[in-house]
Length: 143
Image 1 (cartoon, one colour):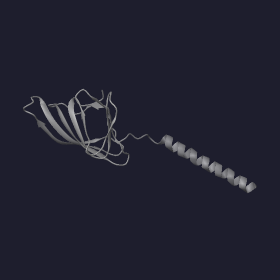
Image 2 (tube, rainbow, N blue to C red):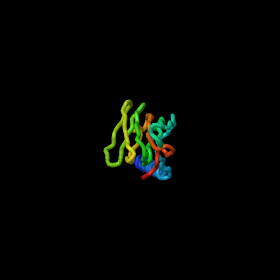
Image 3 (tube, helix red, strand yellow):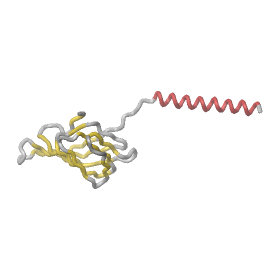
Image 4 (cartoon, one colour):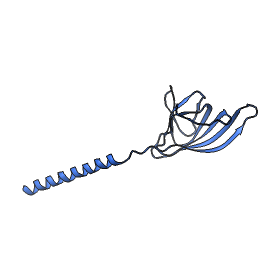
């Protein structure tokens, strides 16, 4: 009986020590920010028929778990999903789930509040087309 009690106490102390170590390790581990989208420019073309305007295309890749920062574009933005699944949202509108073959639009006055990969394990990719003022940035952070 005494041996059983000693073993039970030792097991309790050992498991408590492991829990304390795990708790300490979690507290000491820095919180990691999710990955961010990766933009690869495809082309930019001035539009003589529309003075002061240009078209710009890019491929945007969202690694697993990637999240875009709050931003706007001051442009007409057309998105076509090539791979994976995305969640997009504009200020004042519900979030939208997009899959390969889906398209999405945001206007010059829209604030892009949600942009994330719907998956923590698979990448997502889309092509984006901007119609914007020539020489201005395609993405304007914050708001």
